[in-house]
Image 1: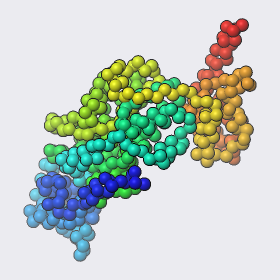
Image 2 (image 1 turned 90 degrees about the horizontal axis):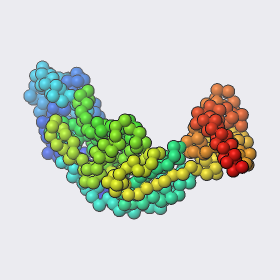
Image 3 (image 1 turned 180 degrees about the horizontal axis):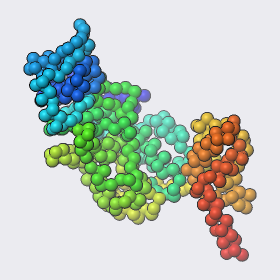
Image 4 (image 1 turned 90 degrees about the vertical axis):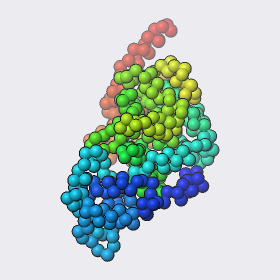
Length: 442
């Protein structure tokens, strides 16, 4: 679809051709040769094709560097055929001494990074003028195809994605806050990011496979990756320390924070107010990158400006007043989620069973529905949540497997209901509340 690979993206792909010589690449000659020397020293013996696979550097560029390093007695070719890619290299004594010194200063060995200046230029071109976005109708429909209900919430997410405005989403536990917000990044166009960035000889890791999902089309230069707009999720474990870029001495790289990983996508602070640290300290840390769309990190004490053009989303089941006006101004849109209706939770329960590939009798849906029907209609009068629908389907599957049954029956659903802790608690207290209401009316 044009939306996911438009004219601008195609032009960018033309720019990101794989460099074939030192004159074409954005990295310094010394950085590349140091990387190759550390790699050969680490492996002992390694073929050019392996070096190409690890570093992403073109074979012609590798030949240019390795032949010169060979002349300087740093490494030596020990085997190979007619093609240079099949040649294997080993480290020499002088090269080993130099590699040991380099490893003590910077132990990074892996994919060749992109220079900081090139990263900044390419990212600036993609982010500039990103909003407002015209989102095709089919993209919106496909994004929400498995979202039941929450029509007002869907509209707000679309408006947030169009304008790049932050949002605050709140409601009781189990109403689908995280699930709904996670759909928002699917509304946004993709972008291209470097896997690693080189800054003052140091390496910063930008690409995180936990949050960055590769698209089908990829640039020729493997140092870059086209990703879907990221959805970066943080919860009660978040601290101000984790919002900084920290050095990993084992990898020899600076690992970027959620603020930077979310660039071009959505950053969700979930369970706001449940963190060990004061949530105001966390929100205050976000004000500058939210306002300026850039953040400052420090690499060996040197300041480095990085892009942080994300849409902020805040989620909580506490009162909205936990955020003050200064923070709410950065998230002017809001979604208030109520508990689902009985038809909605029934639809989600059925969908979960179908997605699990389970067979079930028609009475199973009736039994599930009766849990939430009002007491006056012969039901239990429990409060429905989308989390119940997901959990009960999974618990019923486990019970069905344990019993070695072919289908999920009402009896299995009864066992699943008995096993679910939140339903057990509701069953314990709902009758008491019901009796109090009746006595009060009398």
